[in-house]
Length: 261
Figure 1 (cartoon, one colour):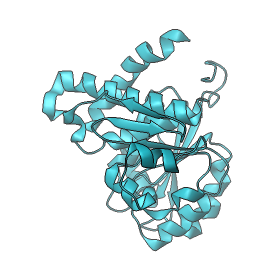
Figure 2 (spheres, one colour):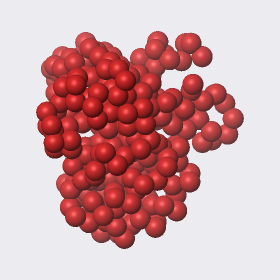
Figure 3 (tube, helix red, strand yellow):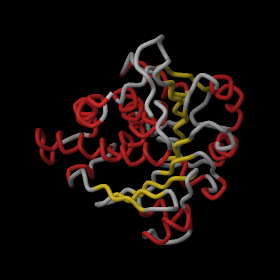
Figure 4 (cartoon, one colour):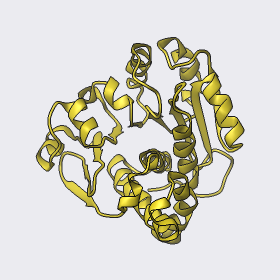
């Protein structure tokens, strides 16, 4: 059930993204703007200060929390924890890198009770079997690193739970809550371009912030991302960019979600 529209700023969903490093900035913008395009009101991004300032220069729509240093670290936990109560869900790992100091931070953040979307580098740093109230979004190699087994329908059913949903990205995406495995066939080969996984994570996180349960957010989110990619492919062919998906997300939302509300 998605939140009711209207009311005051923030009542339609607020997302906190924790990520970024000296080498990765744009992925945070893609994830944050994709989340906003689903209809949520606010996106906060906690990132190393130079990354955060770069995001502010790129988009006025993203609120940044500027953390000292070049990478995320355990010493940032208190500052991030102070704003957690503002968020409906947390997206971890986008562009974060895999340093031991970042792992120390994520080891604390995964303990929070709020819904968590675990993406990108965070998948390499945390113990997935300890996660609760989370959606994991690995591709095949990330799944193997996280769980120690090759991905298949059987291993998805083995490791997924209703409170630990796995969204396995691939030519055909597979989504499981440990009870069933669902397929998503939207999307196209032009979406191998970098960044489409970041838009996916942002969309899924945006849907969670609006009240969808984990499995429904994962199923709908990957469908929306794929359909947005299909619209972008119709315009740009193999020259599409991940940023081209952003303007298509509301078009898909109109048909898939908003017209039924």
